[in-house]
Image 1 (spheres, rainbow, N blue to C red):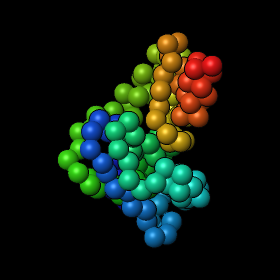
Image 2: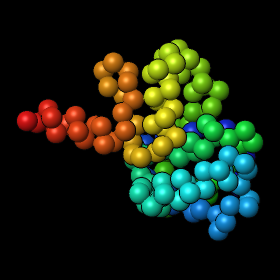
Image 3: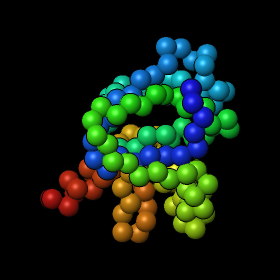
Length: 135
């Protein structure tokens, strides 16, 4: 894969994801996470749109080798955040909140949502919260 040290947040449009046919072209982190990568896309699908993010593999890679290929399926507007800037943001947030943010980004279970206290939540937690608020 290509080398990259940034995350990208999709504001509008859609991208198509393709995975390598096998793990041999990945770095050690990519090979170690191969099953998780496949499971991630089994749950999120291979087309991502507004609110989704891509490039989170740079957070756990020592080499920066990308684990998937992303191609714009439509006109896309994205926001980029380099790994060093994210590390700085997480440091300012503190280890607990910064760690929670990185965990949400890496797990990529769904959109990353920060509550009023700056705590990161994955989509299931957000949906549970919304359901409780409606009751």
